[in-house]
Image (tube, rainbow, N blue to C red; front, side):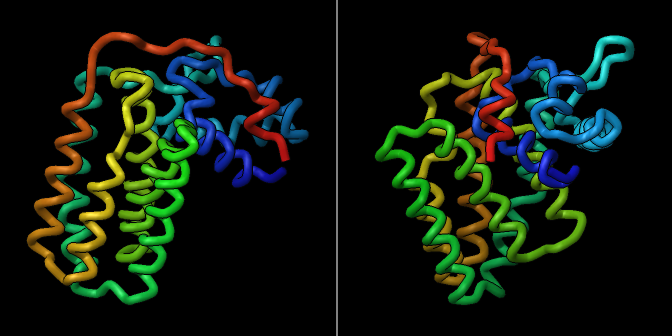
Length: 220
């Protein structure tokens, strides 16, 4: 398994709540389950730390980040500055193929909800936003939104109720309808309202604690 694959598995572990805020990412254990050197693991952890998804503590090791309430508010403010403008731009250039991809993704979200698969619901909700930015950018914005999506999952894990639906699917469906109709202003406002709605579900109690199951995360 190469470094990029390990990086993606950790990101997915966070999106699916298999790696919770505060969980220790022990180099030795990660090296054991992935079959790579600790040097490679350190490189991956350093990359995640640069993205603020992981916290490196001298003489103690790496831990999944635990964003504060203030950081959560700032993160949502950042998303509100970026994503409404992105979907407005997408309205002006979306292709039938783009719309088909988004509709297919929403169908996957619906299936996960029917199965009450919370991990998949959270992961797919985050990936929907990544699809949107991928359709209008291949550079810095794509990287930023991917990082913010991981941080959002950590924040929801810490401050939202475990049974919360993450991004409501109906809001995703309505947004795609607006994009398909080319309604840039409507899509911009809908995304703004959508992000505000997610933020307003935050609570300040009930933080989750669990040891990570590395075998499950890195299983082929």
